[in-house]
Length: 163
Image (cartoon, rainbow, N blue to C red; front, side, top):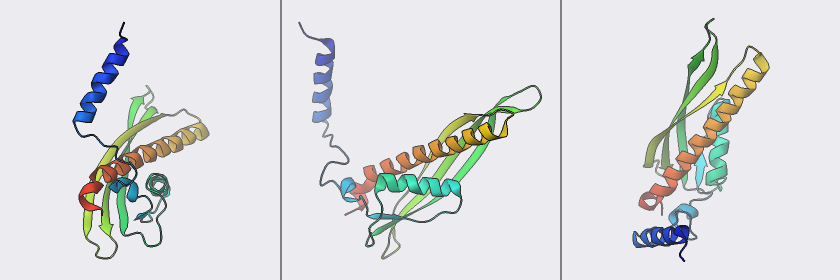
């Protein structure tokens, strides 16, 4: 007797193979060759530093002769979600947008630019310390999410500009 999962997995794998799917980071691919080839500009502020660190984790620490440089502009806004009767906010959304550009170091020519957006939330109380810890944690989560999106966009598009 056939297992439904096995049949479904075989059917899906046949469809994926037929569409020409290739892993983005397979050995020898443009995306895997970009590891350590993109220097990331410094950005002021704790959130900018956090995003830069997360990007280095995903793209690799740049080698001295890295041919590309990544610059980004990070914007984070807050909006209250849950408001108490006495006008206190107990749940806050953090909305992050990162506009980024990849340039060739030698010519400063833009090879890729895009922007990503993500949202995370945190809860707060009347206590200052737990609220600040929750907000800091939300900023870190937001930086990780934005870094993942940026790295994915760079990897997916790299076939068209890196080489």
